[in-house]
Length: 246
Image (cartoon, rainbow, N blue to C red; front, side, top):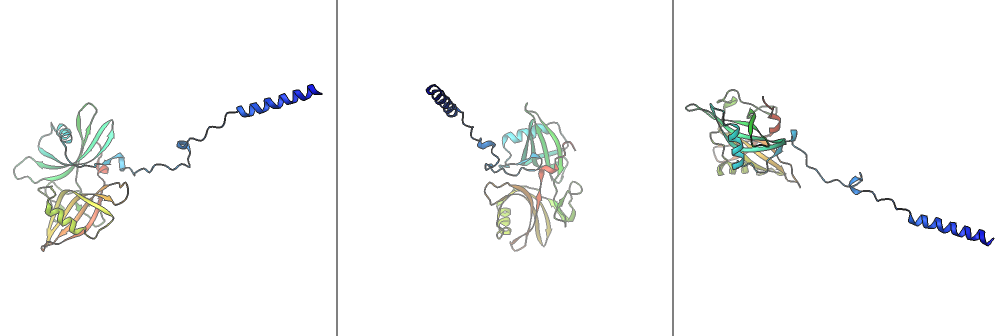
């Protein structure tokens, strides 16, 4: 009997030791837990294009632009602003440029120039698209007809620079508009009426945490007494106009 009890006690001790030695289950990895809160992600720009934080034509950007146009003659292209980039095997750039045919008294126009810069330092033109300027009644803008004259009396601006006067008029026109900040990038076109209608390319940033900026054509009416009023705003998707070789 004593021998049987000893055997039973020994068996119970072995079971207890085995239970204590059992490896606990590994806790769930938070990164793989679908219930974990995900880091907020900004909405991407259509086609993988990203709006440039700084639109300045830096020395590096100008060098890329000039290299792409090194063998193109007949039209003088001057970069005005870098609107955005698209990362590929290298980088695609979208430039707003002033284009002037090389002949006396030629009038300028504004175009979108898409340039591919590869990883070896080469740069090539993907395509050049006319800048949509003329407003339609359906809330869109269309490309001009011809190189010099726009429909409806619109004319391309000789100088794309945003002067203090233009900035002041824009601020006056937007005085009662809240919820977004408007940064004028370029003075694109004007229409002479009883005063002046002006088309400005602006970068718009919603007043929210981590805003995703976008571009729009902003139309401002400037009266003869120094007043200014917002006419309308047309969203502008620069990435949609890149047709890769058209």
